[in-house]
Every structure is written in C-alpha cells, then in structure tokens.
Image (cartoon, rainbow, N blue to C red; front, top):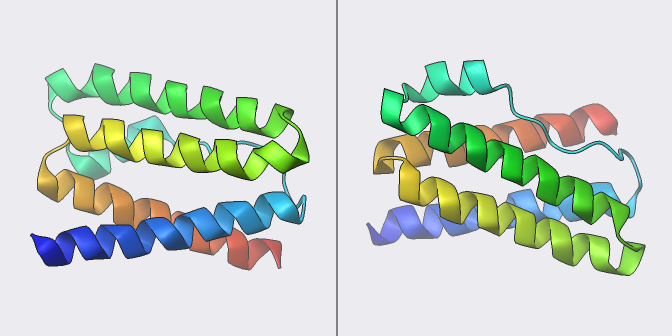
Length: 118
C-alpha cells in the first residue's frame, strides 16, 4: 500500500510538472478533456459509478477553464488545485484497481500530449 502511495505521488508530480510547463509555454489554452465513453469502458465502471465519474470529469473541466482564465501568476496554482481535486474525488469513487488505472492513464496521456507539443 505504501508503494502504491509513492507511485501515485510520483505520477502526480510528473503530471503537475507537465501541466505547469504547458501553461508556462502557452502551448495550449485548451483544458485537458477526457473521452468519457472510453474511460468508462477502460475502467469498467459500475452503473453506480458512471454518473459520479461523469460529474467529476465535468467539474475537472470547469476547474481547468477557470485556471486558464486566471492571470498567468495564478494559472499554475489553480491547475495544480484542479488536478489534486480531480484525483481526490476519483479516489473516493473508484476501487483501488480502477484508481491505479486512472492515474496511469492520466500520466500516459499527459506525457503523450507533451511529446506531441514539442
């Protein structure tokens, strides 16, 4: 369990740095959107989880948009809060295995987006 926590922390740090770098370089002013249908299939969400995860994703998009509308000095802090808030809410809804898959998927997607923007 301790290893999983450290892995999540490391992945989160990578994702946060990537989002911060992306915002600092003004590469993209678009929020990080998740295809809900694909996510639902990949995580094998139960019917009770579907609505909650959809609401969390919508909230995450709203928080990102708010971050992108704020001044440059506050963008990084607000994006950081959006990411942590999303992960915290997802952890409450998903099983440990689903949460691990979700964090891994976010990290891979973030790394791919960074590689494409170079």
